Amino acid sequence: MSHTRPSPVASDRIELKARKVSFDWERTPLHWVPGDPFTTHTINVLHLLLPAGERWFVHVYRQVLPLIRDDSLREDVIGFIGQEAVHSQAHDDVLPHLQRLGLDPTPYTAQVDWLFEKLLGDRTLPPGRASRWWLLERVALIAAIEHYTAFLGDWVLNADELDRRGADATMLDLLRWHGAEEVEHRSVAYELFQHLDGSYHRRVRTWATAFSALVFLWQRGTRFFMANDPSLVDGRASFAQFFRAGQQGVLPSTPEMLRSIPRYLSRAYHPSQEGDTAQAVAYLTASPGANGGR
Ligand SMILES: [Fe+2]
Ligand SMILES: [Fe+2]
Image 1: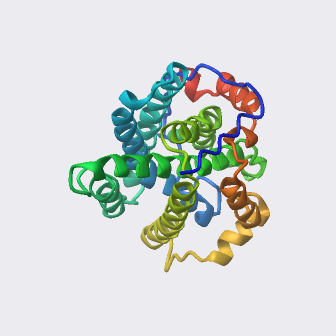
Image 2: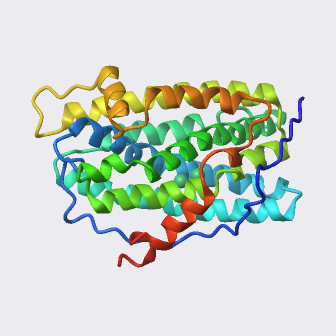
């Protein structure tokens, strides 16, 4: 077992706390990136995956708390749990609005719920020694996923093209509040994994699983929304559209995403090397949704 323990690039440890949020979806249109259903629905996939996914983070981390032998890390994990619970609920709250607009998400969310609650739940393996292995495997999976939530958080905080295209202000605020908290707590999952295990083989293996699953679920979710969008005739999604949207700056660029892979797999990786805590905190101070919907 390899315990590569690179330390943070800057001591920017801050106290993590869940913020109360409030978003009013009343005026958010179906295509909240105007005239661009593909970009809208690609980002909408977050509302399909995150409610169950982040509930699962919380479920796994609650089991892990008694295993943590470092007080400041335990505090961070408790703060992380609080933030992810609010994220999960905030994305869940968008779903009834999509349903009112004619997009019924339930055929897809039922499958995502099964994935996180059953396949990635506690009873996939028989009890005994395997349960510790399975818990560590899930802790490592969460660290890999959090590499991408931090990547996406940093991306959306800087995605000025969405503002230029007139994207819905409430949806942008939800994405940027969430993205900013992802940047803020980006080191927690990785540090927890290092603390409990830190095996490089496990990091690589779980990255491969997490990355493949995310690509699979994301393209499937985008195709699901495009096919079921009541305003589109024969709505389709393709990799070429994704690549172009990335070049235009309304979605993450494919080359940027590819470059993030060797960073996570580097033995010198630490999440503090990615994103900008000061930018995230500045957004959280100004976010209308995170400050009482002002
Ligand atoms: Fe989150
Ligand atoms: Fe997160």
